[in-house]
Image (cartoon, rainbow, N blue to C red; front, top):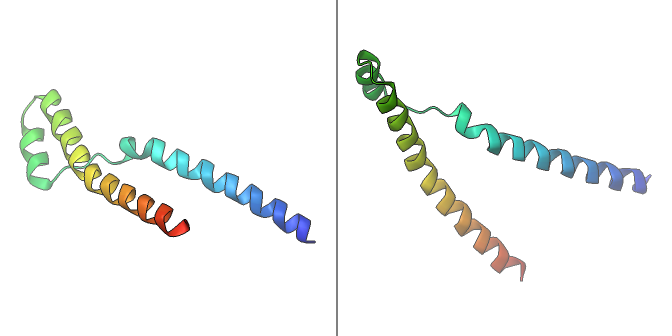
Length: 82
């Protein structure tokens, strides 16, 4: 019985890892962030390149704090384990 539970736990870890990888891989495609004012201004003009540039800039500005916090938590986690 315990062997079956250990195998099931191992399989679930792999599935969770694969799902996390897929979510992180597809996240930039999903998150096309824009504020309402930026969207209104850019939709009124015909410059598609500027709209894509604004979208990419917003996503990069949004991602940097999350990456910094993730790195901080990683180092805290490593410090607590040792």
